[in-house]
Length: 374
Ligand SMILES: Cc1ncc(COP(=O)(O)O)c(C=O)c1O
Image (cartoon, rainbow, N blue to C red; front, side, top):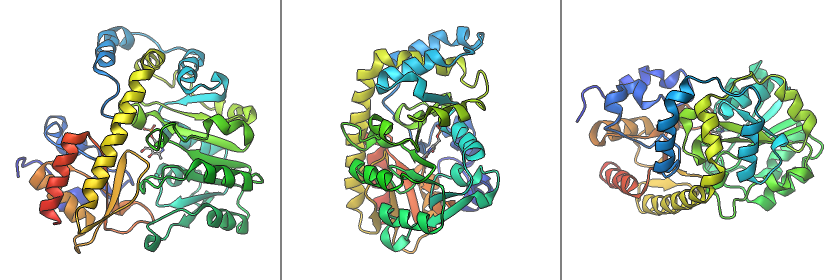
């Protein structure tokens, strides 16, 4: 083991891990300095964007930005974002990460709402009342696949008024094609609110198979997207929601704190229009890496690899080893940190999620797995 401060399996468990459904940040586990020596496959963010030029630009402006107040009006930021999304700025709300918006949506827009599990934890943890979420367990025997018509039947049987779909799913990576989503939304027109979280949709295809250009057709649709993943800026805390329903947006807007975006995040948004071509290049490059990673993982006999439309891959370990044990071995023997999904509600203890970190690092992960679970 290269690093004595790296946690053992037992230490990992005692750590933040079982107190929240998120994986602890690597720096929390081993400190900032040691974290640099470990490849973090939990980190689900585009490694090719922002470009090095953008990073230099951000660095150069940092002292000024730190000493300035953010804008008290979100309109400039909305315009910058709308320019690259090709949508109307007034139909966007930008949040301090999608998580800020999810908490507000959960608190102010939702009564009882359907959530397929396993899911991204914030949707079921940050509710006014845990009973507000009705959990729809996905079947492990069916690879946790979400079947939209069955889901909708279940929603109607329970008279639920709102529902969540994450597309592509986290942690499964399952991608639901645009036509299926449109059929679902047509059939769900009687619901008050359908939240579609498209945080990973930019990796699902080209052109991007998003509902955003079709949002005008569905007045109950609220699209949520994190920018942490596709723009590769989890530390800046940027996410947004989009809807054609201005009434819905205004209900949310009232609760967005003034200055919720920091100056560095605002400045980053101002760079989006001029770097859009570089963004799409980075996005497509990462999609190629994920295809490679997925194929290479499939060549390992003792793991079952799930299809993915995201920038990560979920797999199941079939050797009798738990995901927690494999996670610890990868950390201790290979200085690689992967996501053990055991603490996700509705998931068993055999699943690991790995986000692509670029071809070279991904190849090292595949080599390590060939040693540990041949
Ligand atoms: C599906 C999904 N939505 C939203 C988020 C929140 O992202 P952030 O708050 O970093 O924008 C995440 C983070 O992992 C996610 O997986």
